[in-house]
Image (cartoon, chains in turn purple, red):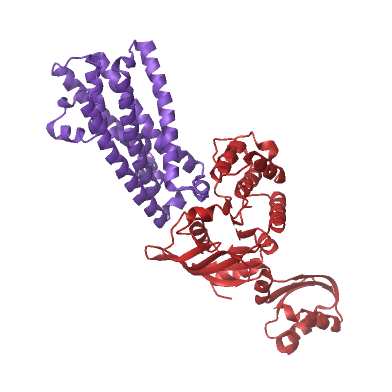
Length: 264
Length: 316
């Protein structure tokens, strides 16, 4: 007997549900990003609505430094993904490299790429929007870059450990998970706009200090050494934590056989 | 005693309650080629994964060149290498770039010379500027072998290196491996589903089934143990004469108790018989006055041994 139209439809819908269940990127792309956008622009609207000084430069500063953070994290994680996608991971790990060397190589090459991209972005902002990022001061530029690269690296290593452990089915965290902290780090508005409990979380994240200091530097290009120091100390903690997390997940991945399966 | 390049002792791998590898122990001497065979799910891949360090054993030890692999991972890896049909190099780089990366990681003193020498040997020099992803399966295999020999390894683990190659390319590739083995006294751990390759290359073969070693011997001895040959006869003459032989075979000791004949209608017979009994069978046929127009004797191959293990799950 010929199946009804509804039966045929239900088969296709079932397929979509199964695929969605197994592919995190579908959830990230279709649910997570819109949700984050709503939250982010909600706070931006709140900031504007409460009479905050709407200075266009606040947004461009936020966007530029936020990109530096995301590009660094993306590079650290995705540099390994290219090996997984190429089925080359086993070849790399049968070479006499240590895991420390592997991560350090990834971090250094990612930092180089990120700085090169940042220079292009800064030039673009200057040419197109007449915004000179150097007006923030050279010392601030160096400190912001250092702190954002360190935090991007910590996040990238942690995400990589999670992917090694659970496989490419959750690879979307490589480019998606960082957006969880985008509203919390107050990249585009002052921390004061956030509700009290989120301000506590925000101040536990190094980028928050960078974005706050960057907004301050728009008025007076002096270095906020307190913020720079707190962000650096926090970053050291996050880097250590990410290395411990990576080591744990890496070992678990090898114990469960997932590491070898990642490369098949 | 010959120098051992690898000694595996009591290797166990458990995934939850499932035991994938169960007390596997073996060793490979310098210059020896050991085959690791078994049906799908026998534990070959898991064993190889533990040997190259991408999966951790639940129990047991792996020693390379007398050193504990768990404690001296980098020192061990510097002296061995790996080639597999299932692991490719970086797809988004040229062949030469890929090889340069590995040459750097192995710390070669003259990487350009070494890469050029091996590319010449495997006849892939013309591919050096090509993107790896554009190579054919045969070209990839040979480039993978170049990578696997960059560090002048004393041991190469080859996991089905000729899988997906056509017979001609597979034969040529295997010939190159045979030459390397002879010239360099290279030790090889070899897995393949092609039993002819295993028979040709391996000094010793381990059969794994359900995670356990069920047999370990030379290919020739493996085949001797499975003593069932098949004799295909085409003949002229009265079929009754063959019937007589058949009766003879069933009832008399000449053909032994294992002999069994099935007869077609066109002067053809297929007789399954112990290899040792074949001369006696031929003598009986001659004595019966039959004229044999064609005869084909098929002795057991390693594939028969493999099938026997895979289907019956028995130890030899």
